[in-house]
Length: 454
Image 1 (cartoon, rainbow, N blue to C red):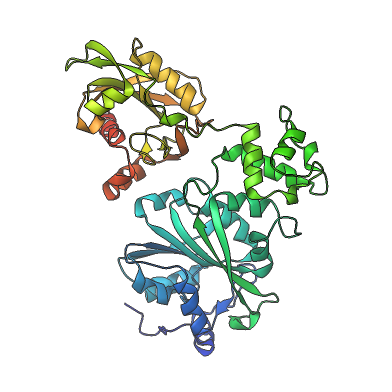
Image 2 (cartoon, helix red, strand yellow):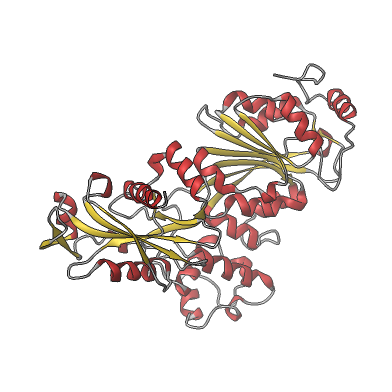
């Protein structure tokens, strides 16, 4: 319910001035507070987000609710993140509802992981220049639950984000964001549509995740490191920064790059190819389902035969597998998102590491091997539970192990799209709200794991 002394339409200039006076708020340059007072523009900006009834809206810096007012009727729920305490209180009064959560705090500190359980998520915001880059990196970082973002930002930065190679605006920020997101410059906004009027123009941009396969896969850490190093001294030739082991002359010739090229001359695709030359990713490896042999077991988990992976899965034969839960010191559980090339549960979230027990091998050695092959770590594992075979485990007898490690991990990109540590209570809620996001075997493993802790 709207507070009776607060105006509902806070887009008109006179209404903004009146409301700010009531709240004893003077726009803060430090907080980048500039209030939009053009009603048509407010409606147009909100429409660019393509909100649907199933969406969760996250709005950064809603201020007096110029965009909020138009968005709430189009979405399932909303999270409003407002740093100014007085404006946050205003929003709580103006939009008091079970579907609206107002967070008084800095969006830079917001935990994006909490959004996975609320997917699908779309993000809207009028971003102060000082926090635009941190916000972009936070919300576009892998993994991200966001389907689309529409931001009003300083025009200069919008030009950088949408710049073409071999221009002065083109830089590390451009390349890193473009690897996983398509960025579109939608419109320039003059300073005259804001109160107070900023000294520079603004622009509206949209960001949408790239479709799977739109660009080649690569190791993200390697990619980001190469790009940042290359642009750190952009006047120098790129060959001086290329790691040893890469034949720069051969690489440049293969991809049509001048041997004397500088960082700004490479397209995002060429940067991806360079990252793969440094750290190759075998994208098709997970599709080889015929070359492995598994032990087939009876209902007592006793070996009775050996069959190919393909035959075992096709016929639904009982076999063996391991799952490993890796925790950090904070007690958070690392989850991997399975590669889209996997023959079972592609693009689903799963245990930290998991794999089949090959013919002639045992559970314990397989658990250690999976940690090494999937996460690139060595370490002790402790058996937590023995889980019987069922439809939920994919006809697998599973031994569940626990390990501790802080990372960072070297992910097997042929097996794993990405990974992240999550608090267990968050995972539990996420499964309850969106079980389709997870491999069924992981859900069963988590159930057994929690039973051992009771």
